[in-house]
Length: 466
Image (cartoon, rainbow, N blue to C red; front, side):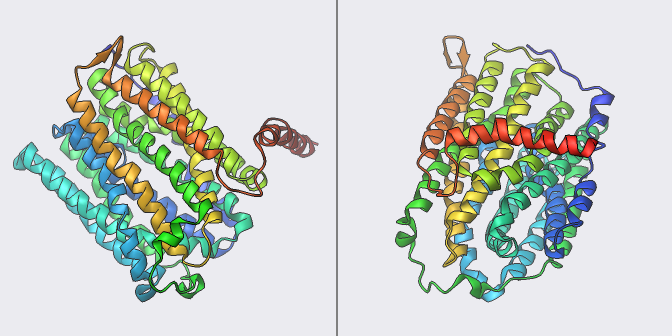
């Protein structure tokens, strides 16, 4: 059970050739400058948050002796402070989209630099003191991000026409995953060469430097007028919640965010505590999921514009159910700790994550009315925060409180994964009720996905080869 699965040098280098710069160049040939700048921001910003909020965060806390409850608290900070978007939306008329984002991003980047310093001096501070100071700075980082990020979606919604949003969001996803591949491999190499505080400090220092670079790129994106949203006066929250298409989307979102919070919390404890894997391997594993998304998203973007978002959400949620089942099997030792099992787990995560992120964001952009757009987006973010923020703490408490509990051959890790799978299945049922008039039905969608799209791709390939 404690056998280590070790990546070879070839596996480290295999994905590193995929550079986000290539995709940026390809996109820039056919699209306006404002969208090219937005994509450049997404790339540089991904370098920053992947260092501060990705696998390195969990590994730092585990190295400082954090319990599952503390890990849940750390994972919960980002979504819980996302609820501050409600307050940030009220600041938009005064500051504007770009100004509010810039202020928040610059301030949060300072916090990332201080976190790197705390990690570097953690041997002198003591693990307990360093952990709580680190968590305090993390709370400041996520709070500043939560207030400022309310501007991003309404800003981009105005810059990208509705007919091109699926295509644009697919490029955003592909670029993000390409960046995560390069960053993940780099972090794994750093942790292998410099285990301990020095390696962690370098990664978080990188997150600080790229955070400042992201702010500079953001400053070059053209602003958009707040007046385009209309004036709501006093925000009528009850009226907004009574808008049926938006309310149904909120309910479905709450279910799958609660489930995904468990999936995001458990994987590091399973690999580190149950199977005693090294930090370098744990940091590298998400590269497989990112590679899967990178390959799929350029194909899914045009497809989702033709078929609609709802069928994509349904299929992606079912794949998430399969993913949770695979993790449960690994946690219960019903699956072996081997590369085939890990690759299957990460590939399903890549497929489901890419499709669900693309489809849910596109459906949200199409569901939210122009009147009060920022407030609708903020309310959606708050709902997501309830699932992503409260749930990890509860999952962590369950993991700590029931650490020795078993049901038949299933340990608490496997049982939580199964519970997450049931919630994802419930979200899939709720997805069937979502409102999207121009979306294809399930049968039509499957025919488009497995018959018409491959046929068109084959025809294009034959024409090119001629």
